Length: 299
Image 1 (cartoon, rainbow, N blue to C red):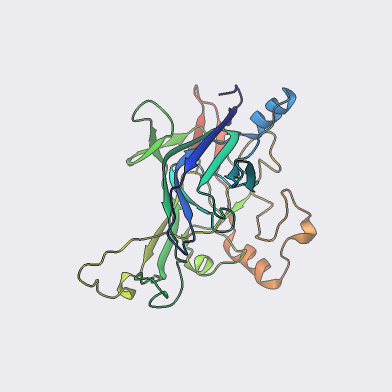
Image 2 (image 1 turned 60 degrees about the vertical axis):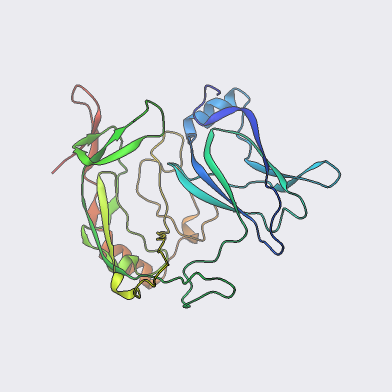
């Protein structure tokens, strides 16, 4: 590992996928986590002549040569979870792939699926599949203050685990200045996918419940698997990041970069109504030093 957060020496992982079923649309299911770089580590690495590369997915050709299948295959987003990587358009007749990068990534398990059905469709079944997807509507959404679940390292190593049964009153995080979404019922903001977001700070929680009565009785021999779908953005608080100390500018799906040209931000009447109706709460957590350091709630 290099002395820059999120950077490692060049490494690769070669996978023999074995034989896939006829007509398969292979998908890798990769469970792991990523040790994120920071803007400060990128600046320091750049000054030392280093830059992040990949992860690139290479595919072994029939003549024994490696070719680039995906120039950027993406990474597992933060703490441990499973990412899906569609190989159907890049694998061809090969059964060997190689991941190469100098990012600090950890994979605990890699599996291969013949196909992955599209979830969230509003039909009772999918052609050629025994899966019966259903979508449950959001029943309630409450934005409120929580404080901080205790961060632990059960085996003394990263990644952290958060213990929700033990809530601490402070955390070592700075706070963005600006207007946040008001506490209380925020269900109307979360009922559709658009550029109107619930804007919340650290130490807060969004308590969600869903209407299970929309699900039919479970037939004998079947089981349910639940998937949580969310759409949003996260903003860091780092010295070298764009607009790092403020809540604004708010993100939107069509933005090409950040910070963005203010003229490209949504300006329609519905968006301005959302801002004036929902984002009315000044951020109230402030960085301070009281013999230690941390973020505490100020009333």
